Each structure stands twice: as structure tokens, then as C-alpha cells.
Length: 269
Image (cartoon, rainbow, N blue to C red):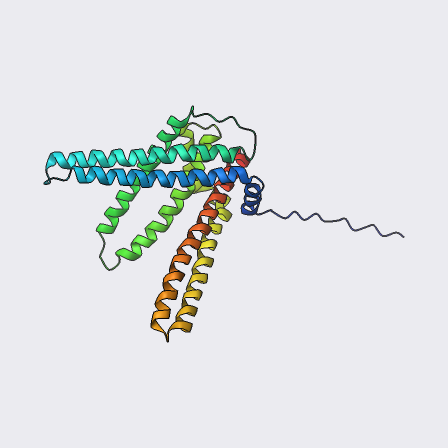
């Protein structure tokens, strides 16, 4: 009597979304480089606008009056709207680079104005939420305020991060402004597990870096504590290097996660 061969059990390993996005970015270094360039150009534009705003702020310095307060509010609003437009311009371009990783694209600025409107709406919603949170903080005892702030700030930043990336990906995949806002909120509050790996990656990177820097700082203190000048010089260099490394690693995670968010939206269509 012949024994039947045992059927092979196929085990499908779920590939890491972050790793897939990383490989996609690595295999298209020219487009990834353009994303980095446009992010750098955005930072340069923000710095230039900041310097210009300081010049105007000094030129309108005068005793406080109602008309001056109105002018200050108008200038502040204009400044933030210009910053938001710069962000919209560069992010819109970056979204095209991301989409071109998945399919051939023809770049056009036809929907840039709508994209800017989308960002104004999202900024308005979260500004209103921030005002409500400030009201809550102002109504509690000062001793508990820092703990309540942390309790409110972490989910606030988390939801803001997810909603912005989701709404942008939806919009660039053809959704209207209204659909992008509605679906991004619905996905964020009902399907957060879809972005579980994307969010956990950010948290894990931050935790690992914090542990690395904390351990290195403690080691420096242990080895150089007997020589105060050596300790100060070493710790100063260590602090500068830590900031640079943290910024680079954190930016890399943000860059790869943009691709991950876009990939999730494409797969869910």
C-alpha cells in the first residue's frame, strides 16, 4: 500500500511594507534624489520667507494700536498662507515622483490650486482642534498641564501625520477635495491598523535612536567625567553629531513612509 505524499503547505510571508517601499526607493535613486532635493528646496524657501518676514516685522515696528494689531494679524495670515503654498507646491511635485515609482506619469500643475485648497482645509480643521486643546489645557491645574499636554499632543500629531499623507495620496490618485478629506478621516479612525507598520516604524526608529544616544551619552560621562574640559568638548561634539544623525534617520523614515502611504492607497482602490 502506497502512502500518499504529504501535500506541501504554502506559507506566504507577508512582506514588510516599509522594506518594499525602501527597495522601491533604492531601485529608483534618481527619483528618490529629486524627492530629497525638493524637500531641501522647501526648507530653503521657508528660511528665505522667514528672513523676509523679519525684515517687514522690523519695518512696521510702532506703538501698539488696533490698526497695527489688525495689520499684524493680516501679515501673519499671509505669511502662513504663503508657507502653506510653498509646501503644497513642493509636496505636489514629490507626489508625482512617488506615483511615477508605480506607473508612468505625465506631470501637470492643473490640480495644484485644488491641492492648495485641500491643505488649507486640513490646516483649518487641525488649527480648530488645537484651539480646543489649548482651552482644555487652560482650564486645568498648572501642575497637571504638562501631562495632559503630552496625552493630547501624541494622538494629535499621530492623526495629523496619517490624515495628511492619506489625504494627499487619495487626492493624487484622482479623488476630489471633499472625498480626500472625508476618506482620510474615515480611514484614519476606522482602519488605523492598515498603517500600523508605518507608524510603528517611526516609533521604533525614534526609540532605537534615543536608546543609542542615551547609552552613548552615559558612556561619555562615565569615561570623561574625571576630566571636565574633555567631557565638555566631547559632549559638545556628541550633541552635534546626535542631532545630525537623528535628523537624517528620521527624515529617511518619513521619506520611505510617504511611499508606503501611497502604496496602501493604491492597493485599497
